[in-house]
Image (cartoon, rainbow, N blue to C red; front, side, top):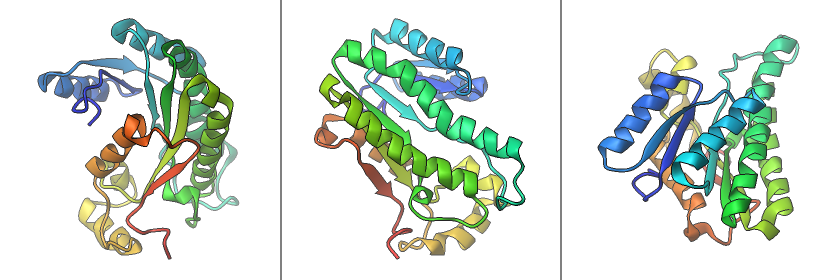
Length: 228
């Protein structure tokens, strides 16, 4: 979606084959892309990813942070400390490390847009998801602080909060997508799961001048999940 809007895209992921496949798909469409290995739990890896991106494209205008761990369902009594720490490290601390690496490059360009993928579960609870809900709520607050601290430098920061979306993550909780649709679809007022392209369009909006008067906001694209 970003490539279609004219952006050069660094596809950064800890899963290098996936990053390469996405970059190849973008380049097949005639746009510019760069696969980048990134471990968001490692500050040096975050800095290297930004440096590689800046070297290739000449600067950095947008950071979209979407890394999230696959947490298993457990109450706080059932969840061990290692599992809690891993979710916090990837979902939240990773966002801190990437923002810390990216903002100086944006300042050098005269501004930019930071987009953190939060969740409808940053606003409402889901049983057995203490770490996930806590991190997604924290990302919403982190974006507000970033917006406050860096508005004078031309940097906008917002969160994008999807409902349940038909991605590979869904299959970590449900045996197949049809089962996921049956169980999760009715939780949304629109009676279905969201599609990746619907979230992609919202992300491009937050990156673009169409949202120039938005900062410190949470864009909820959840099919009505939190409306009732």
